[in-house]
Image (cartoon, rainbow, N blue to C red; front, side):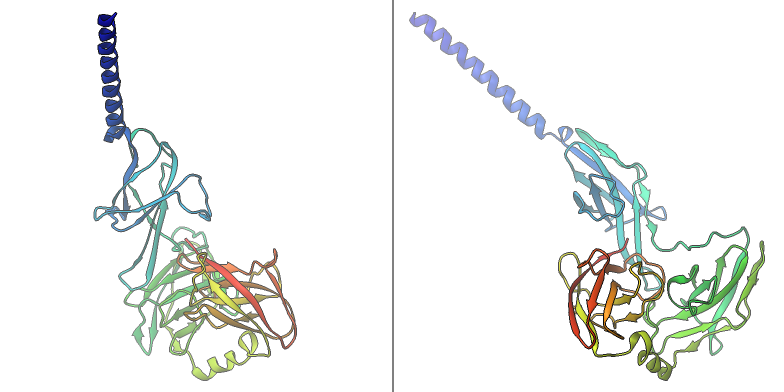
Length: 369
């Protein structure tokens, strides 16, 4: 019996040893590079590696990107990235904010053409893809070989990096978001705009701040084309003759600010503009509309917020106003802008009494991509 007991102990010891060896081998296999799941790839811009770009991973194809990404990383000097991920299906987006050669802020973005990507044990490689500059697309579909060319000047000298806007009517006063197309002049003040055949009103502006849109200030350059409207026949590139810009007149600007949408009054809506993390956002205008659709020109506009995010919006009388906010005045939304609405009511309406200074609270804005 003693001999059998010893044999049993030896046998059990061998089994334990074998089990431990298998367990160690299993753990080692689980920790090996082949057993982990990962996603790697490369981001490009104009077919060149894009360093320091942001790579965002989503679990769903959320087009408005209102949800937080599941994972985030950055590309290296060669535009490459690597993410360790659990097995699953993922949607990948590349983003980058950078300064272009002309000093303006350029927003690059693209979704991976292969979305969604399946990630299993081992590595999944995303084919390299190019990011695109956002906001460069116009709103008009051009006819072949049809459009406008010209040169913008000021006191006889070319005006580089000015914006040339094309409007299809003049009811807007040739201001604001109703333009159909906009392009920027080159360093010699020259431009070319592809358009469908038709009749157009053309305006050129150069803001000292360099943006495509925003309230004009003293020192900015602005003029409509002298021979508006311009007829553009199908299949022709119409060359505009002399297109001189004039400097914004300080007295006219002061008169505008003292009346209409900018006029100070005793009826005020005030509050804070902040991002989703509660941080104050400066440089944002707050708008008041009489229509809940909030389209076209607002009836009142605040001065842009300062570093503390505070705003004061003067309105002409008591009543219900529909409140929105964005970091540019006029023009279509551009990537990099901040935009938001007052959400205290589903229709974004806020009521203020005559001669009241009413606190609206916080307007939360998000960055447009």
